[in-house]
Every structure is written in structure tokens, then in C-alpha cells.
Image 1 (cartoon, chains in turn red, green):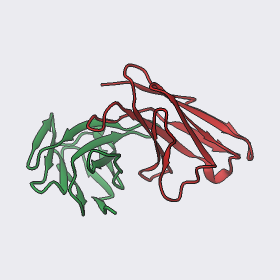
Image 2 (spheres, rainbow over the protein chains, first blue to last red; image 1 turned 90 degrees about the vertical axis):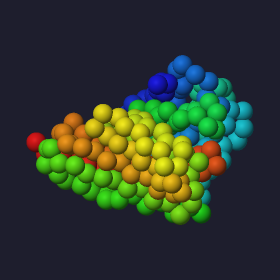
Image 3 (cartoon, one colour; image 1 turned 45 degrees about the horizontal axis):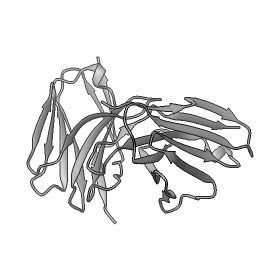
Image 4 (cartoon, chains in turn blue, brown; image 1 turned 90 degrees about the horizontal axis):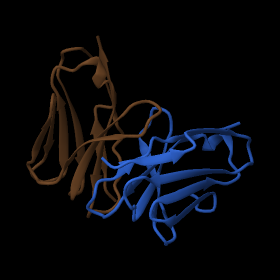
Length: 115
Length: 110
């Protein structure tokens, strides 16, 4: 299957700082990338849908000014958690696909811990 | 708004037993994926089902898509400790983004 990478795999930061997470599709061009958040012992919750060259579409309840998403190329999307707080600590996972009928391939996730 | 239910939420069984996980929606899926996730890792795709009534087998795993394309099941035969993990269904509506079910946490005891 297709390969999607995330960087970093884990990050610890102080409250109030911003953290950037990268999602890359390594062997295909991803027209659309998705960002999910997963709290311990819970399922994945879709945060936003990112189409290359367009503004991201955020799910209800997700603050777009807090979670900045950029999808500047067909192989890279970034999620920036601005002014992070301890409640933002979570497992962030991205996925990517080429066409709407294609399967989504998931990255390995990024563990964010905000102190 | 689509309602999606996955059951059971937790399952702890002995090695060798069979089990079934269910995924039900209030709306028709255009397709449905089943994923397995281990702690600290991203979900790994197991199968995609598209056609109503479709049955797919992956070794000891059997996936079924309901005729009305509003439900799906995953059956594991003779479960092994290596099957332990979080199983997630993810239907797609109108080939758009998809949402995950609540997940079934499976623990297979040796």
C-alpha cells in the first residue's frame, strides 16, 4: 500500500508554545489530506479536511485559528497547534488519498504532550 | 447527520474463540473500510468493501457488507493473541471524507 509519514513521531512542549506537525505522502500525490485526533482509549475524531491549494474545511467544534492547516503541495500538509495547552495533548494522525474513490492511507501518528 | 454505531466496544476472549464486530449506520455507505490499530501507531487498512452483500476473506478474518449498504461485520475465526488491537470501521458517504466508528478494543488471551 501507499506510504504516509508524519514528523515528528512525538513532541513535548510547554504550555503557550506552538507546535508544527508534518504529514507527507511518500509515493503518491495526495489531493486530499485529513487530520484526526485520538484521545486515549477513544476512536479517531476527524478534525479537518485539507485539499491541496485550498483552505482547509474544519469539523464542527474544531477551532480553525488554533489548529492551522496548510496543504501547499500534493505531498505535504502541516498542522500547527497554536498556543498549545495541556488539553491539546493527544495523538494526532493524518491520512492522504489521491481521488475521492481511493482508499485513505494513514500516517503513523504524532504524540503531542503539552506540559 | 449520519449516526454510526460500532459494537461491542470491548471484547476479551480466550485464544481459539470466534468473535464478530458490528458496524451500523443510519445512512447508506458508498464504501466501508475496516482498520486495525495498535497502541501508538496509525490505523492499518484491512479491507475495503463496496458492493452490497459483498463478502471478503482475509485469512481468518471475514468481512461482510450488508445488502442495503448500511451495515458491516467483521468475523474472526480462532482468534490469536496477535489479533489483539483496536478494530475500527470507517464508512464513506458519497465518496467523501469518512468518519470512524467508536472502535472495538479486542484482547485475546493466550
